[in-house]
Amino acid sequence: MNNFFSRKTIIIFLSAVLTSLILAILSVVSDGRVSPVGSVINAITSPIQGITSSISDFFGTNINREEYYENLEVENERLRNELAAAQQAARENDALGKENVQLRAALGLRERDRTLVFEPAEVIAKNSDNWSRTYTINKGTNSGINIDNCVVTTEGMVGYVSEVGNSWATVTSITDASIEVSAIASRTRDVASIEGSFDLMVQGLLRLSFLPRDTQLLEGDMIETSGFGGLFPKGIVLGSVVEVKSEEHGISKYAIIKPAVNVENVSHVLVIKSFSITE
Image 1 (cartoon, rainbow, N blue to C red):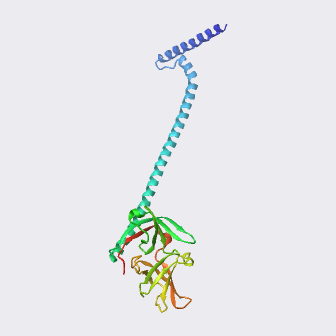
Image 2: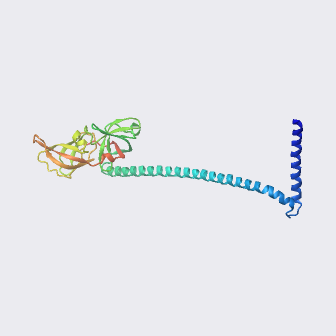
Image 3: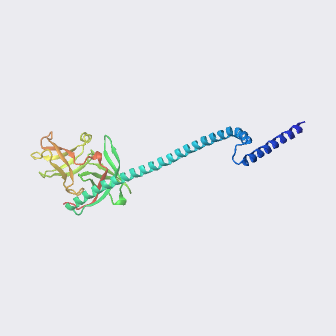
């Protein structure tokens, strides 16, 4: 019984296929005229064609939308890369510009003292706490930098090298409490000593000690390195006088000095590797 229904189903299926073929042939040979058979075929196939068209439009629209977003993401990624490259180029140009300024300053200093030998460097880290003021620069012994080398900018002295490695060095700032530099007043030629102190360090100021009691030093007078002792070269600007005061014992005076360099904003420096020693 089951075999009978199976054979019957096959016969019906084959008959349907044959009928479809005959109807298709009749539709073709009807010379473009809409025959009754064509009408029947159209009536049957039109809904199917509509559904097929809708499905095609749906997938086509979604494929186009997906391609659009993929292209948009690719374009955004390209723009992000171009922006990052432009920003990096700007940073490099800015660094080169600042280094160029320092090198021009070096040329100016060398016009006064042709024995000066410089090494440009970049500040890569800063340490500022209650006890010290130091920087780390990106040059070291590989570039000929050594302990006690004087570090300057276009404005004046930044500090000195207190520790050094192969490709780095620590610079103790001129505002550090431990600083001590032999100094001279540019106008009055008073010889004194720049000294750091914890009280003044937090204010970004220095102390000029051992001034004579009859000093004629005035507010705004420039103070520079004296070169005495041979540790630092002569004539490097240290700062300007803010105020002159008498020591408690009354034997001498001292002055409050504002550093020539804004040490908080230093980014590029020159390390003086060698110079002529003043006797």
